Image 1 (spheres, one colour):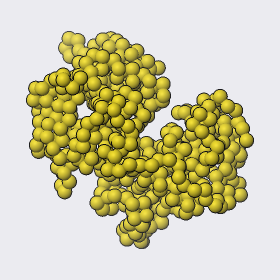
Image 2 (tube, rainbow, N blue to C red):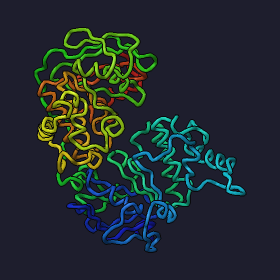
Image 3 (spheres, one colour):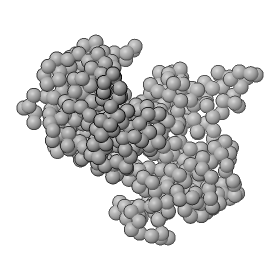
Image 4 (tube, one colour):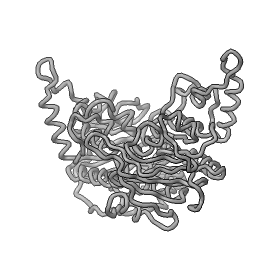
Length: 502
């Protein structure tokens, strides 16, 4: 494979921002018909390198070659014209128009006098959608689709051109297992056609399943390329962060406090039914299940975002009724949501303002918000959570995923909750930051917080949890202690094979 002429090659790319050398002479190549992983911690330079390739950034030094022909990328349209397609992690769709119009935006087929050829547009789109085995059609309004289906629309864009290289940036972050399988089939088809695939993901199991080679960036510099079949997770991790990580469950059992939250027979329509569980002070209770099992919906009900149809909620032994998020916060429940960028942060605001947003009304000095009080809160949780940011003035959208997640956690810790619910705590976060978040959750439990962790990653839920609740189709199937749980028993429970057991 390496004897072929590369489909795409970057040579000596240098890109600097004020005070930061984001890319330091990076060279990278992908062969025709190859799936090539690009890995590194958040902030390692992966996104910057891809933005240089896509013409969004212009490098100070370096060259780009397509089929060994030197090319200057002056913008995304020029990248597309040269056969380079991007499947972005952050959706870039127009929600008010149809799937077909989004897929062919800027290139709508025309009839005489410039009129749109709707019949051709819809026929072409439906042909692509059939390959992706989706349940919607060309005429569907994008805003009516789930996040997962919107991601499939992004993927469909790559099938509209004769691509030389396709870049997938965290493409499975919002997909179910069935949708992931379809995506991997699409990648296999592109590969068979000789298209070079650049695959960016923090999910090691995907990297080792579908890629041929892995290139690693660290601190803006190229650290090497390895054949996937000849390496392992530990070697890749050492290249990414400069050290090995031990992700086995090593924390010792702790003396738990009283029950902080108890739920009896909680239901919410068809979303989940008859859920009963409890979590104690000093404990991490994990929730594990397939997408759609009802885990997030339970969290949203406890936080007042959904109205329960049955059941009772007790905080410190006292029955409570929670009617809204404000109600939940006042009663001592905080929720770090599944999507930090859409639900947990205001990306255009600075770190301090994001941190203090829920309590800004209590930080006033006369008619104005007290800057000193806000900065004091930010400084406290910046140090406590080891948030890496140049200053409180930094726009939170410019932070790495791990530091963004710490801002969200700090925001809710500053409200001094009794129960902290964290939904998908490390989604889209690199392996080094993931370890930091895991250690933080364990440390919060040690400090006496009752912590509920919802995760789609089995290693994560096994690593951080004292007990695990397994869910299937809206029902609690079984509860495990950390000592008794095995991967096999957990898989059986979330697949509906085992019923409730004591």
